[in-house]
Image 1 (tube, helix red, strand yellow):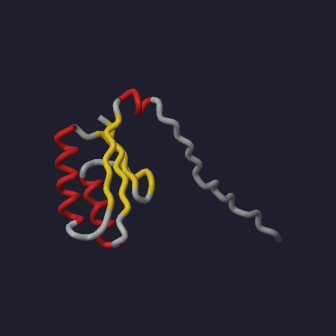
Image 2 (cartoon, rainbow, N blue to C red):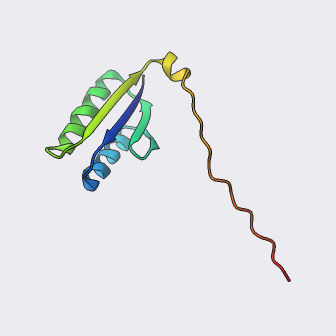
Image 3 (cartoon, rainbow, N blue to C red):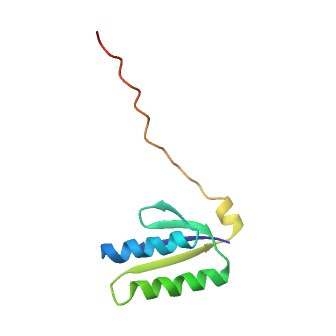
Length: 92
C-alpha cells in the first residue's frame, strides 16, 4: 500500500534524523518534509514507532496517510523541473 508521510518539525537535527529514517524505510522524498512510498501495514506501525522515538520530547507533528491503490492511481501531479540553461554562444 502506498503511504504519504508529512511532518513539521522545528528542530533541524531531529528533522534530518526523521528524514533519514524515512529514507531507510524506502520512502522517496517528494517535498522537503514529505515522503511517499509503499509500506505494508506492519511496516507503517513500525515506522511510526521509530519516528516517535527519534522525535523524543521535541515538538513536532508527523502524519502518515495510507493510500489505497485507487486513490494513488487517481492522484494528479504537476511537476516542472528547472529548464537547462544552454551554453551561451561565445562572441569573437
